Image 1 (cartoon, rainbow, N blue to C red):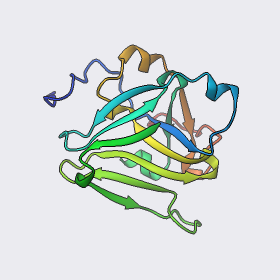
Image 2 (cartoon, one colour):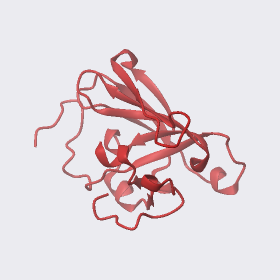
Image 3 (spheres, rainbow, N blue to C red):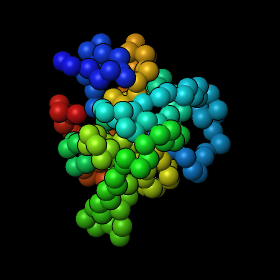
Image 4 (cartoon, rainbow, N blue to C red):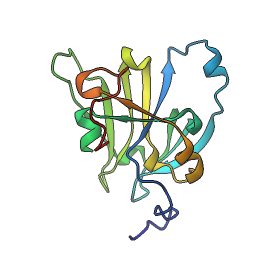
Length: 166
């Protein structure tokens, strides 16, 4: 499999389609949040036109969701290439407006981290795909717990009945 010159080879990483939800606001004053160990990871799209940094604690785990967007397809800041992104918002049936803004690289088409607002997710959050992180430790990622969410049925507190394809 060819690799991008700015990235390490990906064949050593476990297969995954996980993402990390970083809750931005409101920030709950809990012991769990205080014990998180945030690390700044750098990431990029496939072609490198969009580069970002995300402050996340991989040990807190990743999320796999079965909503139509996740199955088809930290604190976060774009370091370079913001002009190379295009946005997409979708309003799910029964909702008054979009719940998440997806961003894509205009050059290679890879989805870059998105921003959402959902009460079920704790308010404002960013979804950072772990596949985009260039410097993630494969052992740390493999050891991270995975939380499954039934986003297809708006049951973000439940595991989907079928996780075989997540």
